[in-house]
Structures are given as structure tokens and as C-alpha cells.
Length: 272
Image (cartoon, rainbow, N blue to C red; front, side, top):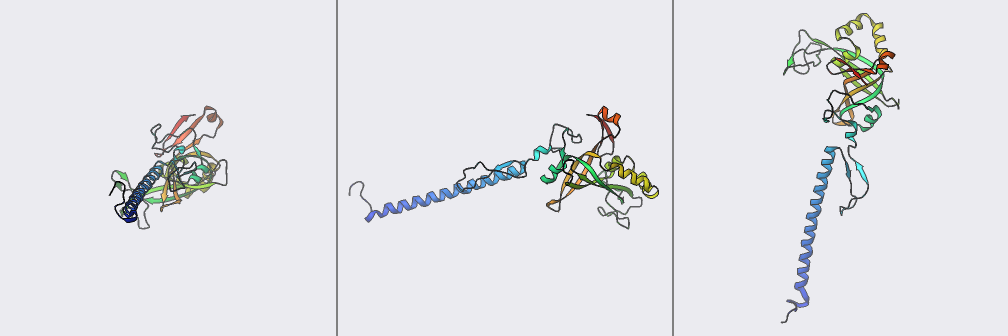
């Protein structure tokens, strides 16, 4: 036997060796493909967390196309707070977003929104006065004065106020969104304590109506906390945690002074 001769008739050994090499290569290709898929999935998950655009490849070879799709796109352009360290959480940005932008974006988070007040409704309710971990419970009481949160039965319940406001986009009036203003922020917005407001409801309905009417059509900047409700982005709670409003008289407008109502109900004068 000389060098180069087949070990078996018709080159069978070579055929077997070639088939084995093909199987190894196929297995290696499968492993590389699986690894690539895992990396792509990790990349997309990271992009979702970072709210960034993700390049999507349409072929199994993994070559990226120029086509880009956005997953939860542009979250950073809404200047979310308190994730930003550039300004305090309760300070308003100089350029808030329009209502339509946030409504179309439709994701939970903290947003600063400029809009008109299209409608305003109110509700008074009894709340739990019990302190839980150093903070007042404030959960709504049932008809028997029992707290729905901590089950405490209150002898001297708190009287609380919340407002239901309909916000309207300044440029696209057909875009509206309802939001809720709770407790101290509601009191600050109406410039009165809840006890005074309750007394007005009972004894001065005309004054109450005039007060609510004075707020309609007003342009405000609000700090919104959009909370996911029921696991569906299409049905969210919009909570107003602070309000920025302009004074109405011309002298104040010339000075550029605006009034900020924060979540403590306090007012602070600021200069434009």
C-alpha cells in the first residue's frame, strides 16, 4: 500500500470522515446561532430597560439592516424626574411637554405637562387619621367609619378633598386627559383649606361655582405621576403631584412671576 491509497474500497473512509466533519460544523453553527439569539435578546431587554432604539435584523444571518424600530421610544426626551440629577425633583423644567405628546407616548413615569383646564370636578370624603410608619394613613373610610386600608375604625376622621381635572392640549384641543389632584395639592390649587371648602359646598354654592369656573380655561403646567393601572398601558392613573400656574393680573405678568404649588400645598413665587 502506498501513500494516498484509500483504506477501504471506493473511498468509504473519506466519505465517513467528511460526513462527521459536516455534522460537527452544523452543531457548531447551531451553537453560534443560539448564542447570537441569546445576545440579541439580552440586547433588546437592555434596550427596553434603557428606553432606547433597537436595531432589528430581518435575516437569520444576523446582519443588521438600516431599519430601526423604537421600543418605548424617546423616554428621556420627556425629562423624567427624579431620575435626572440635574434638577431637584420638585422643580419645573423651562420647557414642559404638551399633553398630546405624553398621551400618545402612553407610558408610566413622571412628566411635566403644559395644558389647559377644560373641566373641574370635586369630591369630599372621610379618611383614616391613623399614623402608619410615621405617616397618616389617609385611606378612604366606609359608611361605618372603618378604614379600607388598615381596618382602623376612626372616631375623628379626617376630611379630605380630591379634584378631578380634565386637561386639554393647548394646540390640539381634541386631545383631552383626566387627572386627579389629591389633598394638599388640591387645597393649594383652590387656595383654601378643605374645611373652608366643605363649608362653601354646604352654605355658599354660588361662590363655589364661581371658584370652579375661574379655573376653567386656565393654562397650567403640572407635574404628572403616570401610574400603570391593572397592567395595561391603555388604562393608567394620572396623578397631579404639583401645579405651576401663572398669576392673572397684568402687573404680575410683567414681573414674570409665577406661582408653584407643590405636594405640600405650599406656594412659592418664582421668576421666569
